[in-house]
Image 1 (cartoon, rainbow, N blue to C red):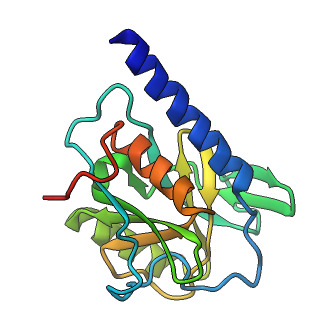
Image 2: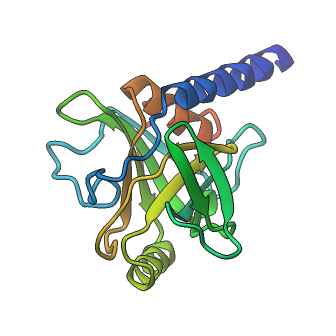
Length: 189
């Protein structure tokens, strides 16, 4: 039993390390709606779905979404990237506890997508923060690894955040890790 748990942990950590290796740093001209627009049902990531349990199993990966910017901000952490620097607010806007469901899939071009379905309270919080701080970025961090930091140009008002994370396999591994090792094919309630 301990061997199985250890194997899952090693596989989860390895998958997240692969995610980090596949990460591309944010670009200035990145599409502004890459993160939080509502994706039509035909394009929504639906290959893998995991319901996020109310209480995190010990093996569940941490998840947080932070407000970030390419310009220095007082009190924000400086994160060096291959193509520059990103400044991240140390206070998360969204945490794993704000998730209702997490989905992994791909878009029509084959890009891996990770969709976070938010609680009503989290939806209101993300809307308020993105309205107060226009033109910034939302940095997705799973177990201390930044996976994506796309920009937005208008308030995010949907209850779903969608991040491009490389391949569909990367997205599925991240979804399983955040859900605590739940099978990515488990149906959502």
